[in-house]
Image 1 (cartoon, rainbow, N blue to C red):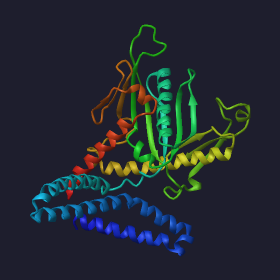
Image 2: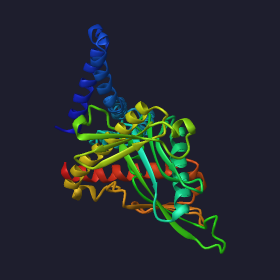
Image 3: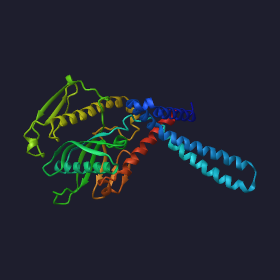
Image 4: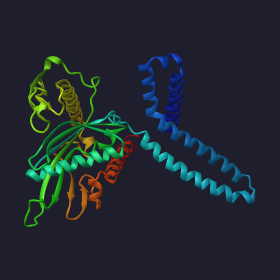
Length: 359
């Protein structure tokens, strides 16, 4: 089956789903309607581009007929139309190749973002706070919601660790390449001799796992409650509202104490645990596909050094794709689109190479 046959089949499926969504019986069945709507939405962009391509092809055919008519007054005009439609079709075909690439099933999900201070002591905790702020600002610009699940402050006002849930439109598709070690090079505020120090933070981006994605057996977890510590007020610190969930088969431990309600902390801890279990399972699958993943942007391993933020030179370098931009101040304010877009484009190019090899 060539790509035109594939596109025609996708369009037929889209039309069938549209008809289902207009069926009164389906409209009354919320689950069935949402399933059809989700399936329709997943191919709507492909169908739209295919219809653009078909319209352009029709215009090209008409221009070719006009040029073949032999009318001297129309030949030049027809040739201009032919050249324009050929360029348009080429651009649409490039877009369609990307749209037809295998979809990451997690792209539409929200994420659990985990930022932890690494080497560098107090300076690392300050940088962790700035990195989290960078992602929060980026999320704000995309109209995503950021909800802190758990956090731990350092003595200097930085963050030893912060875990947050980010939800919105295709969050994981934008942030999935951010996992790894982020290194900072700058003169710390406490440095009296002006020497540049290197510190690091670890970032993990986990696709948000729903209950349908990961089932947790209640007999395989231990839930402990304890008094919260740190900021939060007396009412938090004097009640057993903090929750620690231990997953016995894997040894994974998640603590949550940001809410005054034990029930809310438990719910948040289980959400984080599900996402970590999903990541664990997917990591096993990725290990089996290691050769294929070496050509991608990165393995997603949180021990992999992916980026350096050099403050004296006002530059950011992404080591995986060899990209350097001199817009550090803007990036720290959340304007990281040049990095995100370049990583997505690089990954798509690598995937297209793979498609070309196997097709």
